[in-house]
Image (cartoon, rainbow, N blue to C red; front, side, top):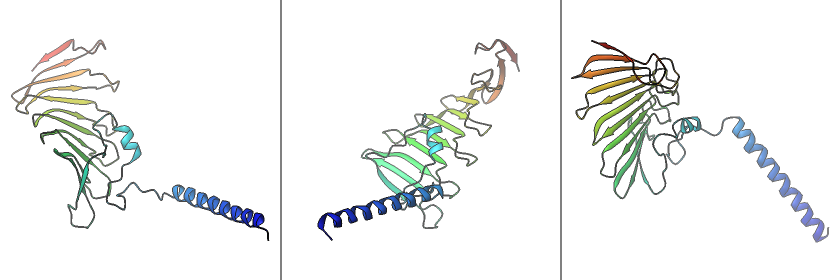
Length: 206
């Protein structure tokens, strides 16, 4: 066999191996080999649909951050991931029900204070509650009561974390149409938008 024919034979063999490898990889993905659970290195897996849904929230970047893995339930698998930089903790992620997926995200300021917390309450891969803090004190809370990722209720709090106002989207059109006002933790007034302009025009003093 000449050198040219030998090289051609080797090229064909290599080509066949590449084709076979491509088929195996394709079948692996179809069969679900790509897991949403923790990766082999202990880094948490993220559901792509969840990342898309919550991309308008806190930053999930790990660039330039160190990672500490914590086993909360003693099963030798990480359930909490703490990301830090030279200034301290930046973000904490937790798997609350130990199924390998993140259910809670906490974000911290440069001085170590909690500024935002996201939770997937019904463990369906969608964030259902986002809580914001100012100077470490509860400031605002967004809730998706339908567990569909749509935040229909927003609660506002004073400097002592007491409820001040609740805004609700009752018809699901994305705009607030009812308001509840509180004093010392007690509801004192309600308002409704009956014209659809986003401003309360009817009130009920309680």
